[in-house]
Length: 370
Image (cartoon, rainbow, N blue to C red; front, side):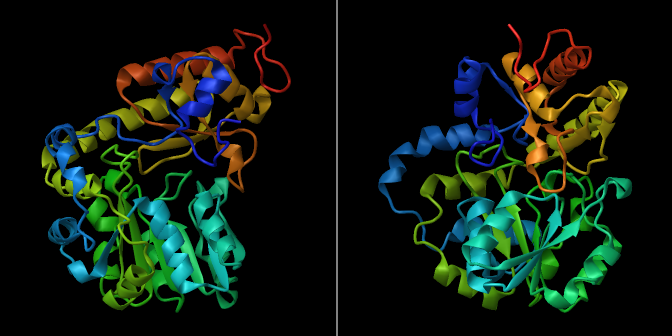
């Protein structure tokens, strides 16, 4: 199984499974910006490598100040972490919820963090007939049993943002609301939909951001959380010292100033997303509308195809896709793919088309027959 460690983007496991070097794969299983990293990242790595003899700033002052200026929020409402994953775990450890409401399907690390503090879970279902948008009636019935709600905005793996009406309901629910905005940078009307500014002053709202996806720096590990300064102080007290290394701080502060990179990314996605959605639909796949840089789709039931078969077939062709059946609430027909550059996307469509036509024989377990 490619998702042996719970995520896409595991090139080491892919190399073992398909017998080719890591560098020879087109990775559609992790949702990184194909335009990145920005050029300034290379400059920092070249110019600053000697500075790793110094301790990083324990208060991450420069980066917090840059984030404060970019998003117009108080720096005391910002805590920077070693990627969004650290912050998810940190928030749950500090809040220690008895019962947490999670959308299904959603990012598995929310559930893992809750299990670590021995908290209970209530599933809030997302249905294909609603295009996987969360419905208020599916939340309302569970509210009295919940301490907090932990939701993706946009959600992973569905790629959908929360509607303004349900955000309004959630904010008035009297429960703590944690929103993971790891992919919000890719939303065309980001400022309209993000709740970062509100979270900086609201006692019951917490917003997590990742910087690794948009700037394509997952190896650096960088994210931040915005909340009321009182909660930020509690989170900072529980955070591991030196969580954010020197290079991560320097790179984070620099990429925030690269406005041309942001503009290029949004222009690329505005063209490439509808093209790829149309091509996947042309193959007869059921494509879920997406607000971000990845797409969830299902093989039609009549085709008899499964995502595990597709993952094996395409892996042998050098293309990695995400088995979305591993997300609770999705079945063996669901697959998630990133959106990449046109040349790569054309290769994806070509290999998927061959798979749909059964050009090569595939066994019952999805393994190619020699």
